[in-house]
Image 1 (spheres, rainbow, N blue to C red):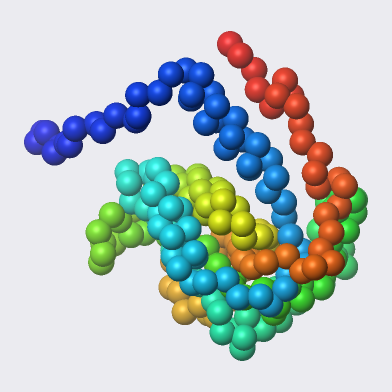
Image 2 (tube, rainbow, N blue to C red):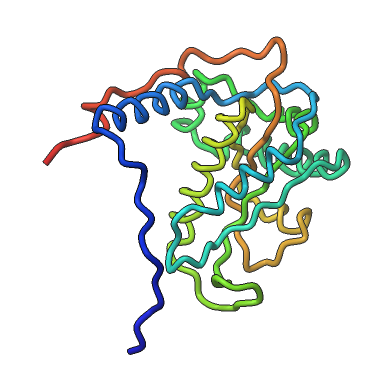
Length: 224
């Protein structure tokens, strides 16, 4: 077997443990202020911010480094409205009983409903697709691996980077989402994973108290 080519590992800066802890704490404190926004203004967000954020998302680890994601970025008012129309059609069925009582009860403290007017108002929608086939090079048609996990990590980096830019976001997952393939002109082999709404919060935006509750460390981690 031919040995794969390598490049030298470029070390991180030589920080003290105290400096490393301070850096982690600063990032933790910043990310702790991230909130999901459901009331957007139409105030513009420069495209360059989204381009940098998507490039950051594209640096995420992925199965075999196949980078099995595609970000369809929508600014067209007509296309945003088409997304809203398709999403609300699915959401009306969801809230009419398709979701099941337990799920609806879980959502009640957040106060969501079938109205997704923010899909029209926010300046940008990013539809994230997972690619079942592709590969690391343009034009590849190979099996991709750990697609859901890889796309999830990339989306986390996208949200964190947009938050660092002071831009509000919302993750929206209408179900089913195949209508997004047609609207975004993406092949059937790709799976729409979510819509990330991007913009500035409206002046009267609020946050449900339930949404800011976070589990403590001892509830989310064990040390073995």
